[in-house]
Image 1 (cartoon, helix red, strand yellow):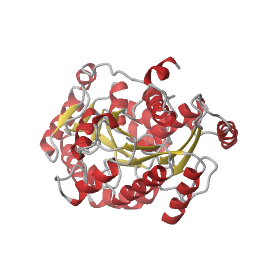
Image 2 (spheres, one colour; image 1 turned 180 degrees about the vertical axis):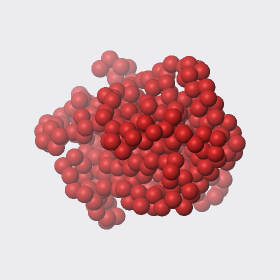
Image 3 (cartoon, one colour; image 1 turned 120 degrees about the vertical axis):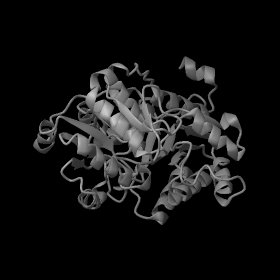
Image 4 (tube, one colour; image 1 turned 180 degrees about the horizontal axis):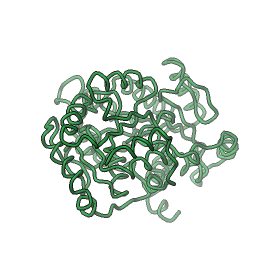
Length: 397
């Protein structure tokens, strides 16, 4: 998912410092210190991990935790009081060591797409366990990714089997992902499905848009929205073909592509020109959350191309806003999503045509989306594992 952070969500550095000082002195009723090192992404740029980490940090700090964030995002080398920067692999290693020696639990994120992410997670979890600290892992991908699941007995399968045996708890975003994780032979009670999507994801105030974007909306009869990055799972060649062919019948409809990282923008603009879709497309880099939802709410429909994403938060955001979602069928899409077959441009074009011609009927068919406070659920579980509090005590508290 890709949405951005609201200004209110990016905590003032002085507030972070004061809360952290107070939290360092906080001790639970079990005698365990409330300290945790959250290893993941912090905006900018924006991604699903950064969005979920904002809500979790806010929830944990409200409970008196000293919650330190180690930033692995594109801006990881930029020093900031809001997070712990990472300058290199060695810097990452020693900063994790320093925190576990000081009594911090470790919660790290991984998916089945990057080898580097695998080794960063493996190192952090091993350091936590060797130091006697709680070790938690979030598997932040869908149930079908590039490196996992893998054939039983293969190197990839053995590698993830090792990784999943280290943490005391593994979080994922659906039962489908849990079933895949269990193919490594880990105990079922070690895996807890808790989606990233939470109540604060749908809280936003519409924002004024830049003149360039307003002009783009105004000069088109309708605009399709798509969140993209310059990675293979976003199937950009496929999307460009769909845009070219759709414009042959609907030349007054535009396409807003949002989300490329700053370092990808030159490459993305070149791609748009080479694909001969520059006259139909407006490309925006990562934007704040309120702006993301403002753009999405004004769109004909949201086109979602990856099949590796599992329960996608931006899909749920779109449905909550009553914006039709035209998504690749990955087997785990929520009710109300209109599905097309991966690689089948005709099936996508059929849905795009329906959205342009019968938009009102498509909107009316979207069901109500239940939104849960999953940040609270995740914080509850972290406390149960890290502070060894029974489930009934957590409910009472």
